[in-house]
Amino acid sequence: MNAFANIEVKKSGQLAYLIINRPERRNALNKETLDEMTEALQELAKDDETGCIIFSGSGEKSFAAGADIGQLKTRTALDVFNPGGMQQVYDYIETYEKPTIAMVNGFALGGGCELAMACDIRIASELAKFGLPELNLSIIPSAGGTQRLARLIGKGPAMNMILRGKIIDANEAYRIGLVSEVAESGQLQARTEEAAKEILSKGPLAVKLAKLAVHAGFDADQRTGLLIEKLAQAVLFSTEDKNEGTAAFLEKRKPQFTSR
Image 1 (cartoon, rainbow, N blue to C red):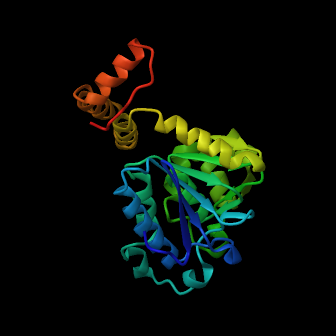
Image 2 (spheres, rainbow, N blue to C red; image 1 turned 90 degrees about the horizontal axis):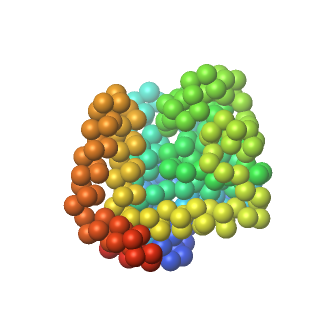
C-alpha cells in the first residue's frame, strides 16, 4: 500500500487501522485526507487478510474535529456536486463490504461525527465529545449528519443537537444511542479490538449480507425489508459456510469459515 501524507494505515492480523494523521490540525478532514481514505479503503477491500476496518485519529485529543475550515471557506454552490466529496466518501464507508468500527478517541465534531456515524459501530473513549456545530458557520451538516443522526437517535434528539449545536460527552452519546459502548481511555483500543474479534468470529458472508439487509431494508417499507432479508437468507442457505457453521455447532467445535 502507498504511503500517505494525511492518514496512516496499520495492519494487525485481520484488523486494519485507518488513522487520520493531522494532529496539528486536530485531524481536520481536508479534500486530500478524504481522497487518501478512499484510496486506502479501496486497497483494503481487495486484501483478503483484512476482515475489519477501525477508524481513529492520531493523538489523544481528536478523532476528527470536522472539515478543514480553510478549504470550506472557499467552497461555492456547485462544489457540493463534485465527485469525491465528504458525503460521497461517507456513503462509501457506510456501504463498505467489510465491517467498520469508529474508535473515537477524542473530539468527533462536524465531519468527524459524521464519519463515526457512517461506521457500523461506534466505541468511544470516556473523554470523547460529539457534536454537529455547523450552524455556527451558517451551513448545515451535509456529510450525512441531518440524515444519519436522526436515524440513529430519533428525529427530536437530532433536531435538538443540530439546531443548538450541542456538544455532548461520551456518556450522553451512549445514553441516546449514538455510540455502542464507552471505554476508559486506557482501554479503548482493547475494547475496540475485542468487538472487532467478536465480529470476525462470525461467518464473513453472513456479516456482509446482514449489513446489506439492514441498510437496504432500513430505507424501505417493512414488507420490502422482509423480502430483502429473505433473499439474503436464501443466498446464505446455499453456502458452504452455512453447512460448516451448523455442523460446528452440532459437533461443539469452532467453525472454519472459508467465505464460500
